[in-house]
Image (cartoon, rainbow, N blue to C red; front, side, top):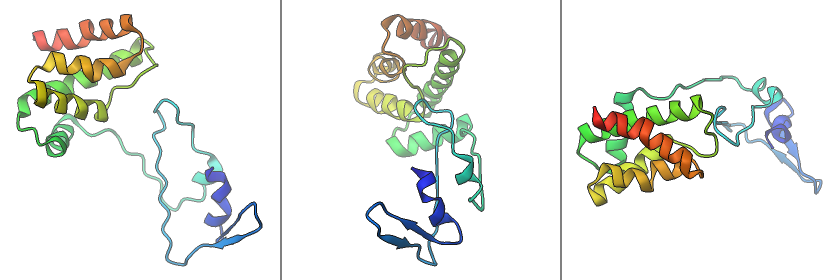
Length: 158
């Protein structure tokens, strides 16, 4: 899709629609393109699009402290200690899945936010994990159990 916008990003400043209509870019237009390069289902950015960008910034995932502050702010949760533990578990789950080629699910910031919100409702970190993080990590029950045993149990037991 982005390749189709290349002419809009070039000096001609316009794009030609299939119906023959020409759309001219406004002189004050700012175009921002974002993607998750390593996220399942996302394809690599086309080099022809990247070469038309004036500025390209690769952002790393936030450190644990920043992540916890953001999640506390988004959810309204005040239990920083529990959210910090949950953030550690999410990171461990993500690494475990990458190392063990569990690729049919996801475990990231959105899953952490859902987990915290569920925890705020039920008050049980393990029960909340089963309905959020663990159910998102894989469609395979065996893989979910491996993740629960290898990540959740080991960190909560510490």
